[in-house]
Image (cartoon, rainbow, N blue to C red; front, side, top):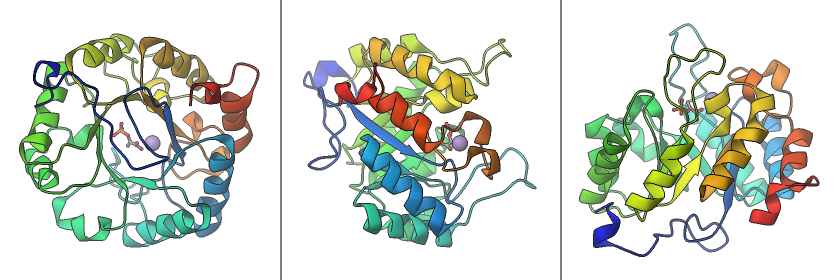
Length: 262
Ligand code: PEP
Ligand code: MN
């Protein structure tokens, strides 16, 4: 069960050098979407050098508009695996349907996006896997609902769940979503599962990534997932909220760098 009452010690998810939880501070970085081999290898090597422990990149993209770029699908997974081989970084990528599970055999962490947080059939299937699952909070889901979705995966026998606060829908329109900083502290109190924050989708603009990342650290997050693109202006998805490689390096290794946390 996700509740601390039944499991007081913090859970660690991920293998040696890539642990998430229990005092490790782990940063996942990479583009919103996998676009090309050159893009992925460039960004993988850059974020690794800056201190990221995982490479992210979407191959199956849950876009609001059916006319927007939907991702490279199988080819995207193949390019992620190439970037993994080139950089040595383990990879995180989103699954949209349990029918695609075979394609995820060599993926290190499977992401369930905000829009699928309550896709219960998908959660049940992932419960039968042993792979780490990064479960993002739904756009309008309560903390209790997030924990119940985690419970679906745990109940199936998979103990490897990482929770992610990625901003919620509120009346506020100045930011893409509202980062629920309280959720980090509430979750850390209620559950032994690792809790990470996505400052990129929370704020929706690159300049907000740093303050939101610092807020997440202050609230006790076990890590961050940050969108980084070698050329944000030309990104096929979420360019406005993406850091370029230099901005990510500054965030990690600048004067008040987050790498000291890692
Ligand atoms: C993503 O990580 O690119 C993504 C689509 O996130 P979310 O599900 O939180 O919107
Ligand atoms: Mn994105």
